[in-house]
Image 1 (cartoon, helix red, strand yellow):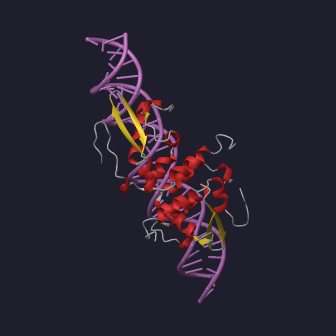
Image 2 (spheres, chains in turn orange, green, purple, brown):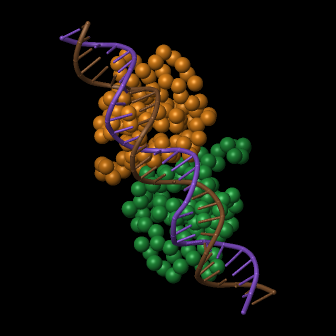
Image 3 (spheres, rainbow over the protein chains, first blue to last red):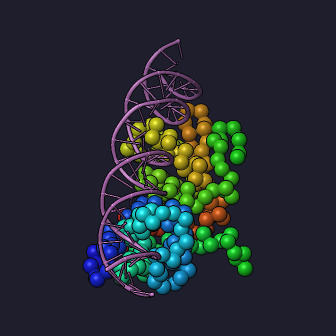
Length: 113
Length: 113
DNA sequence: CCGGAGGTTCGATGAAGTTCGTACCTCGCT
DNA sequence: AGCGAGGTACGAACTTCATCGAACCTCCGG
């Protein structure tokens, strides 16, 4: 568990369970967020920048689920919090999963070409 | 919905939702079953041939979940029921998903070499 | 024809999960 | 100093889910 200044605790990637990950990705709100992060290509984003139609406390809940599923890293900076995908780590542990889910979710949105 | 003799009703693959699929795969028992079917390479299997440590009625429940998630086709033959992966259909709708999940689940079980 | 194996249906139950509102905190800005 | 935006913590309400046992059904084999 890292304890950097402002960094919220996250599980070791080795301890992350596939079932937990799939549960986390099963929720439409959470999947939407992960999708945007995948598209964002590793960039950090303000938590407040996601247009989720849910209450503040519910958001906090979803961020925790994503954190505990090993998908994101969350940083507490002054008056805002920021998230970043744990891209490389996650891919090393669950090779291909993010790409496949992102690919499926993206398909149908835009004509593949 | 197919209504062949003994064939239990299944959703059209186009109607299957990714969230539903991920939820179905999140459960360890169901994922174990799907894994065996993937390894089985399209072969039909007796439902009773899976060594699940749960009650009969709970099994029935899990088969329904897998069916409704579009993952399996289930046939009622005399005194037993049989399942088959909807491999090709499913892969066309969710490309790579089964392979990735199967690959991840298999990794770590046996020393990769 | 009867027994048992395999399955389904029907509640019930207890554990999780999603959602919200309220209270509260901490910054940054005026 | 005071306000507001962004967040967390907590508890409540509600829903969903996994699980089970009991009752019942349908075949196949002796």
